[in-house]
Length: 539
Image (cartoon, rainbow, N blue to C red; front, side, top):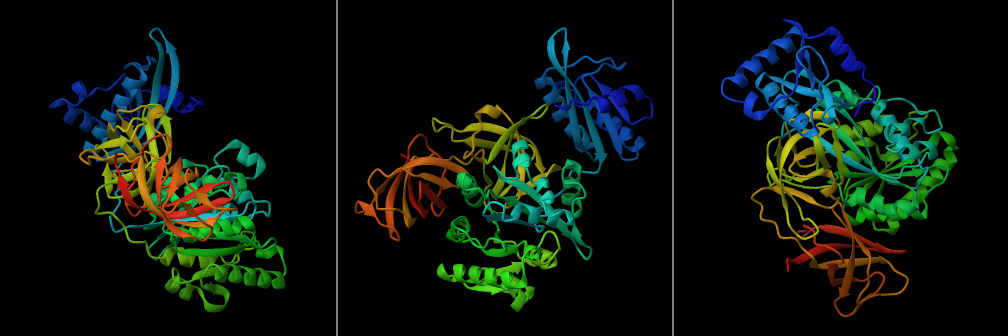
């Protein structure tokens, strides 16, 4: 809910006039305003308002015809926005932004809002459009967020991590200079025009502009470098449909224990990975060479082939990523290596998509938007989804699934008409309260007939454990976006460090939607491992 009423005040002062771009509505209802004949008339009126405003119109909802603030209930406002969206679509326009304010009236708390409409349909996503998703990892203060902030803006850092502020999502993160949750950023490339970057990432409309203008998008899921939040890093790597991993190693510090853990998670999930040696401006050339040697040794220790871009060139990195791990020398301050990263991200192929499979998305976050309602966000795992689709959400704690409807879809603050596999989106849902949505739930087509799973068989590899894993071992399992305590029952009674074996795994508290072939990470204290779901038992 916006605190600044300036947009509302300006609209009311200008007033509703014949031939103008401003329209006052108390409320809009499906029964009245979408009835035969009425819808066509209102769509024509909306089209006229948009053309009168040179492609932009303003609808003030919750006010009388004379501009007096009346206020309507949140439910009535939400329905009004649904109706307005349908009218806009009929008039070849779309709702770009909605601001709302709470008012206290005779009937209690109400809402009044200003909707900005623009000419043209919502952004259409061509199925052939490439949207590459990159997950970043690395030790705290190794400069990964700063590097991403510099890439998406084109602005050089001030040497104090200034550009990383574009990714922080919590006030305490800004104060401490540490990330405590996943952050997201985007930039892109326009055919024959080069990079499309953000002028001001703090402005939602700027992110939306990048989505609209770019022919190829690169989204970053920036994970957490601080050891206490390792589970959030795992969630960012395992729970998103990533195409590539980017591991940051600071030239002034070199690989650390956390660096090796993050690398292990990236490689365990079979993610093509590149390493950026950051802060090369802050050390001597000899130190950069020494750290690069350390990174090469670290990669060879885990059976990977390093490919230093300084020696072999960026074209070789593009050609061989996946079979090798490219290593780039970078600086957000001097700009070293940024052109090579741009070249990589513009050319790297999108990994094989599940766009033709039935729709599926695991919920990573949920939040509530006034006038819109509950929103579930995450990365589309498979298929496509459109506004108006009827879906299932779940499983709930009792194993049931809730019927919901897609109100609208946003990608990096830009309204889109559909989303497909690999895209990071927020989906506004009708039929559920935000408090009922939990991380780890899935969205599926209404006819999916899903079976919640409490217990399954898996093949696991123990990466690290002080003794042995036996019957009753209880780690946290990270699969897609879910993080849940589970009980292991290893085949043969035990698993030792380095072992590859089978085990039954039972979620301790509730069922989830899982499928054969899904990869997961498990951890408990210092012990960690990876696994693959081999068979499921719905009972």
